[in-house]
Amino acid sequence: MRRLLLALGAAGVVVLEVAVLVQVAQLIGWWTLLLLIATSVLGGWLMKRAGVRTLAALRDAMQSGEALDRKLADGGVVLAGGLLMVLPGFVTDVLGALLALPVTRPLATRVFLGVLGRRLADLERAVPPGMGGFGPSTDGQYSQEPGPVVQGKVVSRDETGEDGG
Image (cartoon, rainbow, N blue to C red; front, side, top):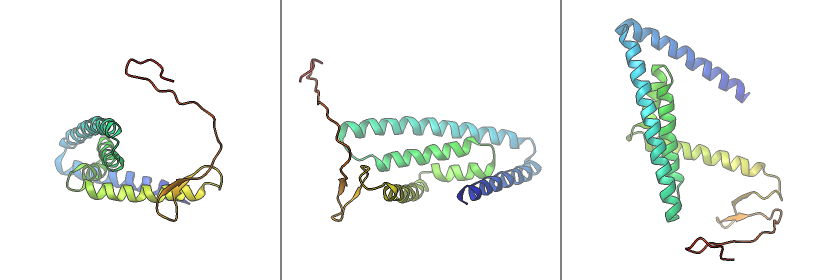
């Protein structure tokens, strides 16, 4: 049922895009093509910029040990906005701009994190007992269920690059 709704929604977006495109073309003529190209170029630039910033934030967060969920989600929302703007059509351009604009992005990021959190919780409930899932325990802390034990050895490197152990 979910796939059917998704397919119907995608078909509805395509029909809406074509209808809006025809209306805009009747109003401004060949400038419509130039406007579509400009929004696609802007979307590509946004995707590149968001990708570079997200990778830099990921690197910095990993070096400092800070949480990265908000930064990654924010970068993902901008990437999604850029992708929507690259697609031909004005409806997707408006949606993409709403995702990418600094004024509306925090709301989109909160919605994205909320949806992602619910999906992860659904996945966690779907993991059979004893399969090594993780999730919040009764005291609110995250705990690891026991899973298969893998024997290994920790190897560290000192400053010279030599194996230390």
